[in-house]
Image 1 (cartoon, rainbow, N blue to C red):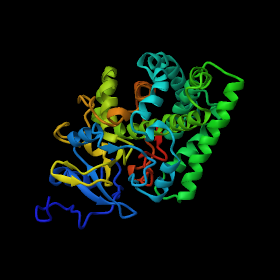
Image 2: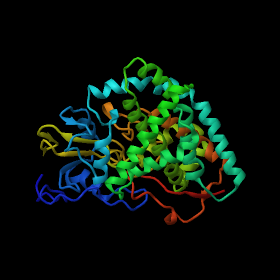
Image 3: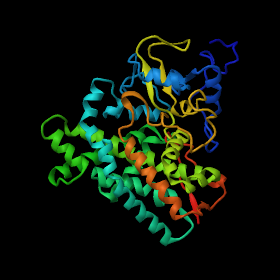
Length: 407
């Protein structure tokens, strides 16, 4: 790669990352430019660190399977998009921020709680909870904020039932998660949000030890804590990770997905006419929307060449899931939203050892919501102009703050 090849990126004049995103469903234009001209693109971070963006699907998958790149959040050279994120990474003790063998050692303690069989057994409960929320929304009448009525409430109720956290705590959990994910908070504010959620989990673990129930946390305490396989502090860190993931990303997918369907009435009509399309529709929604903006991340442990670019030891890597999901080599006409497309190989849940543990639960919740929402409200529509819908341009998890709808 040279500065004479027309590429807008160069190591000498590497642009500052992250890029501005302020156009609703569109990705930053720099991703498409990089995919076309320099798919392994150099950027500079807030602290001057050299980093690289992986913008094509094949490089994304290659690097995430390459043990010459580390996913250890605790490393001093691990790449971050803000100073606040660095403060959070230093506090992260869950397996999401570990390399193997430690990653697999801890992850295995939780995998049986997220098997496809166990998740499918939850589907009737998810359906009943969704029906109840839709009943309440209908009773209260239009207009309604779909994010508040369904997007926030359903994942909170499901996590309460599955994990064992009291429903009345979900607002506090969501507040802590948002405090970690914002792009504008101070390092002190972000770190406090992270510490607050771990402390909440410590207290919840202590309560479950006294009063166990039929829930995930009680089972993990019995299977892992009591035999000495896991410490209470390790469980509190993992508890924090599961709770924030279970609440935040699905909330944002429900709001974004509903709006995207409303803005593509021809696709919505296909779904209404053939409810069996909900499975391919959800995969396409996940591909097209990709709410986690700046992950996965890695740091090079040695000098590595990727597609002709020399990545030096200590350089950061941002494998951009949203860009990989718009790679035309994998998804023809990738900027077209098409619910009949086979998008099942998208990388919205990541790739490799860190692939999302709760992905099947997220899918079930989304299947149920989009099966039932438009059946109950076939004339659902935006209650305000699209330009008045507030997008989360200031968060690492993309989504909507509100979605005013009527019917």
